[in-house]
Image (tube, rainbow, N blue to C red; front, side):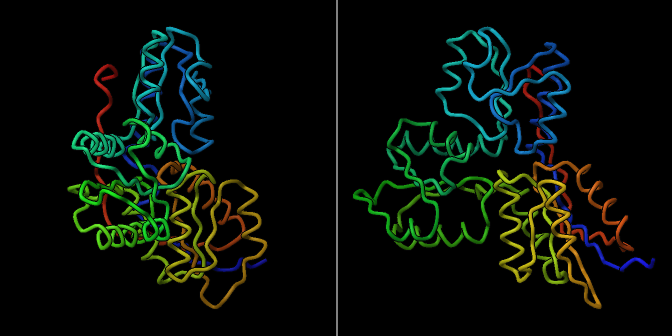
Amino acid sequence: MVKQNINLYLASPRGFCAGVDRAVKIVEQAIKKYGAPIYVRHEIVHNKDVVKSLENLGAIFVDEITDAPESSTIIFSAHGVPKSVFDNAKNRKMLSIDATCPLVTKVHNETIKHFNNNRKVLLIGHKDHPEVIGTMGQIPKGNVILIQDSYDAMNLHIEDTENLAYATQTTLSVDDTKQIIDILKKRFPKIKGPSTEDICYATTNRQLAVKSIAKICNYVLVIGAKNSSNSQRLVEVAKTNGVLNSFLISEENDLNIFLKNLKFSDSTNIGLTAGASAPETLVQVLISKLKKNFDVNLIDHEVIKENIVFNLPKLLR
């Protein structure tokens, strides 16, 4: 039986970012230094395969620090946590290791600075996302207003428009966030913002790569977890840029459904990328599965090179 030909465009950059890589290494190094078990509050990153591999090494993932024994070692996820979590861990005599992405910490510091300068902070982000919860928890309750979309920005009522600032979640759609910021700046000309963009380099670069492959592909597949904000945004970016047949591949059944509904043309071009919390191993597994069914022409599609590395915390170096 002759296999159908497909062109598979591998978006680059894709997959693990420096913040995720750092967070995973923090758990691995902590286990080496302190021994298992090591407790981790929430998923270290939003990927069940990564979580499972760390569990196999001796990590125990808990919902709250009270689920871990007093005086144990606790690691906080890459998404960041409210200040109260650090305080609670200290009260329970726990050794706290902070795996918060340095770019998220930057947003935390900006938020604290604005609060200290008596500014109300408008946080652009998604309700209930761990990163948003962590950022809002850096300053006393009532001093941050969540802006989820352009509607919120247009209909926000603020009495003191002289003392305003904005910050953003790091994993948002670059285009959507720009639209929201433009609305806020037009409505509140004196609003203060970050000196550099809050949306992280990895989010920006992966979205740029998807925009690029969207110009030549009939389909786009994004490997990532359903609760991964940056992975969901990649699917949205692909669709916004003309590839309506764009899908999140979070488990094997998602790929099976895609293959079942795949319609061939004279030029079947499939774009493949992965969210910032998805390891390259998952990309290679998917490629292998496609090769079993098709004659795959692999094409590397690099948009920009990444060479950013974040140092581990001092106690683990």
